Length: 357
Length: 269
Image 1 (cartoon, rainbow over the protein chains, first blue to last red):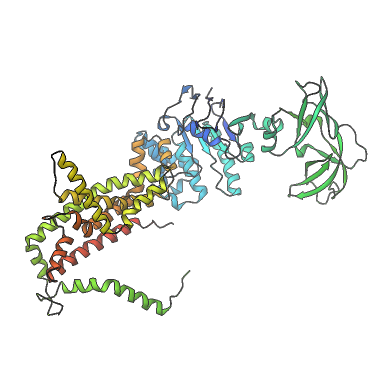
Image 2 (cartoon, each protein chain N blue to C red; image 1 turned 180 degrees about the vertical axis):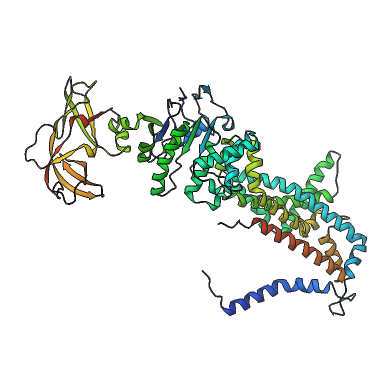
């Protein structure tokens, strides 16, 4: 167990910024804390760094209880959202700061600084001042300044949010590679779901100070447990209904679109109200006149062309459904028209049953 | 964007500068006038400068002025820096009100400041007399008076110097293994230092050439150069006093130029 924590409300006031957080982050993994702004992810990070203290509960890092230990005595380093580079020091001296504070001999420190600068490919700028660097370069310096200390855990607070899209994508890959080669545990805070999906081994989706769901990126995307996760991580179509019957291979749910089959029926009871979630890219539109099993009739309301895919907004049973279809061939006749009647197939394997909120 | 200024505007600017600085230039010029009295130029001399330092009252006032200026600057720089750092670092509920309180000694008329300090000292004195203690107005009362207005200038310069930096710099230092003290000495202080020095220079010149507050709080038998100049000029303007004033102007200008140089933002690449 690398990091464990459970506590309530660091604010002490009426509002609980964090509530009942119980996280177990594994040694050497790339872990993301994903959530909208104000969900408490940054507060959680600050508690790990030691800038804030939990009102109750424990923070255990590398098997040692770190609750109440000040930041400078933790083997944890932070990459700040604003980078927080020291403006009066050169790039080199910024990176050397941590080693200097720990009393690492100067010659050894210089060697490690150069190595760290090399790792993030910024060695050419060692003599510059932070204000002579671009945003992406500052980001690299902030990273070097943290990893040079070889911490047990590296905390990253939305480090890519200030960069433009192209650079962000580039650095996402670099960061993931860096983490792999260093073997340091990364805890990465972001509100960007794509970023979290691309980089993390595992992630926790947070909402209103609670962890909604924890798991591998793939699991969270394919099997969201709550409506919040289903919609925050990508987009989802939610269909409400009542369980008609449960059998060995799944369940049948009565919805406004008629009975729908799902293979995710474990633990359901007949008569129970449930919400089904299905990803837009997992729905299939067809031109059949007749509807068979798990097919519903729908009308095309709107079409959004986004390049790689077409996004169809469909109307069915008084509900709006979204379908993403890959734009595979130029001018293919799979393209549908406005107001066209279609048959929409909802694969039973992809109809996920959400927990009642 | 470079815009050419209208010629009339440049002329007007020169008129304004002349209005502001001609009296001082005249004063400096006449400190080299080889005539005992009056405003007629009779020839160039530098004799008033050595003559000045031959006067024991001038030497004494100079000593007082420098003592007050140095000690008050030291005290107000330390206190003002702490106030400036506090205003920068903490989100205080009454931050706006506190800043307003700091600006008050700057905008309040000197006369009011002088009178209020005079009243304050006599109030304290009457209280202490009841306990059997007493004190005269002099070095200590002037010193305290100067510190009261200097603190404002120092704290505001320090705060404005740090305005662009967030508290995360201190957190970054702590994160990298610095104790509270070391994050102060290695990060906060180096960043604030130009502001601290500029504030100190400002405080020094303010003390050096303060007349009104000093006049009210110095009592008899203790004078600084500005007070000495005033009492002398009452008996007529003499060239040695011109020389003394010219020296004061010189020291003040040097300190202000240095202070501004320190506060100038570093050029971005």
